Image (cartoon, rainbow, N blue to C red):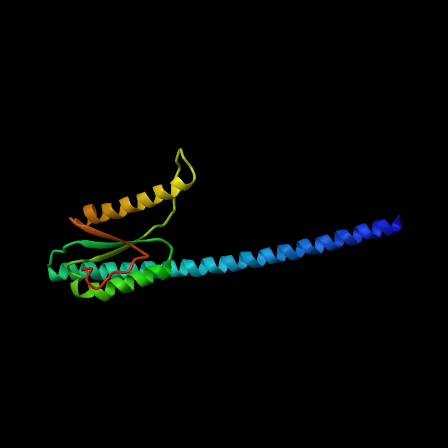
Length: 163
């Protein structure tokens, strides 16, 4: 009888150690994810600063040149810094010489407020994307008074003859 109790205690001790090891592994994963989130937040802040700088330079150039733009170019971005960087480089490669005719705007989808719908699930993503597009287009058509807008997404690269 004592032998069975000792065996049971050893089994419990072994199971406890396994659980402690699993908890430690999960805590390590949580720490790694938190660090990744901090890096991504920092990338987002840097991208926002870059976008604001590009927008202010673009608007100053438009106002200074006195030229009427043909169309605004807007990049609809998500939280994909590597894609956005490639897209911006692609655009700037060909847009710089015609910047006064095609001012560049970049807008990033940020989800601060929850969306409540009668049909939850995958439809929520479409509502959020649609709301982002509506906001961006309202800004360009109504606030900045553009009559034409070219919409690009953050995973696109343009060809040399785009503009």
